[in-house]
Length: 226
Image (cartoon, rainbow, N blue to C red; front, side, top):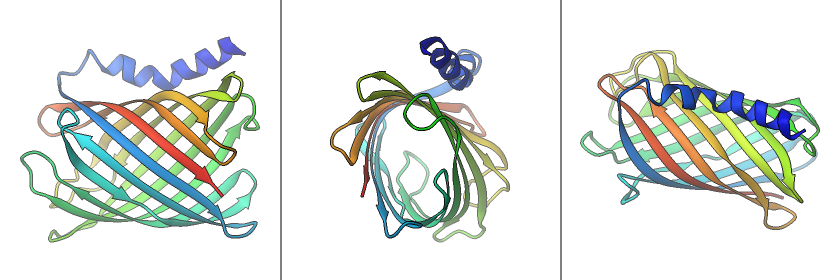
């Protein structure tokens, strides 16, 4: 089982390992914290709440905040569709402050496993992005593949990868094509029966018109289910 887990994890992490030395890029260290809550309204309907705080420029200041609520509907025990909204104020170095609003649709599904042993899941998210004071709507697709596996007691290893693909150009900066790639390696640590912590490392490779950007991110997600 451990060998199989290692091979699957290596396949998910391969894009980061192979891309690193090939492309010259700007570097930044960041700290991200995220809090999520999944609240069952009944057997089918689910309320999703999420807040993230991202500290950039060597983690010296708050560069981005993300507030993302949504309403989900379970099609079956392994599949859920969600519709939501996100508010994403971004304060980058140099470029102007951006006040972004997003509408998003999502399909979450299980590909393999039962949640107890090695489990592979997927998440397909489509975003419609708007920036206050700028015209045009940006369409973007995100596809996450996530692998978990037991390692000791109730602690699980966790790796995931998520490419972002933009479908169009906008006046406020979105460029059509490959946008970025996020890859995570860490653990799932149960804190209580309904709350897990997911500490780990995210490598984010951002495709830019000038030099690309690689962000090394210390990430902590606290996920609650009620």
